[in-house]
Length: 153
Image (spheres, rainbow, N blue to C red):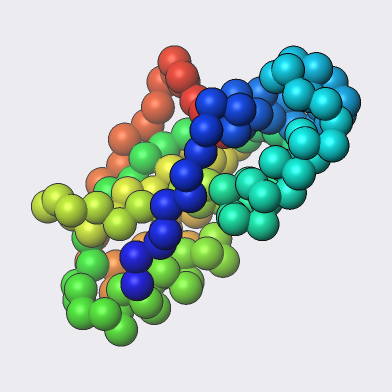
């Protein structure tokens, strides 16, 4: 079932750009910055939330300061790519906290994972005990990130 695209005008687009960098901005300040009063700004925010464009608000954490500086990208090949196997993998990977992102890929492998750990030893443990143990995993290939040049959250 296709997801319906929500039409956005220039005010909506500016609101979303501002919120992407400052999710704690007040409706009054947001309205001032976009040139609308508080009430229409709040109505637009509610519409953007109700339509599912704004899915929530959260704190952005610094993983390096939290001792999670090691990033690896992992190609995962499955032994079975029928729908039941894909669903089993999808469900199981959600339970691995070290996996920050999981994308099904149209390529010579099936999934690309972004995995964050404290160091290479911790990553090796996660790969052996968690990722390789996921349903239908046939093989993996790891690429260690040396530096994050750009990361959007």
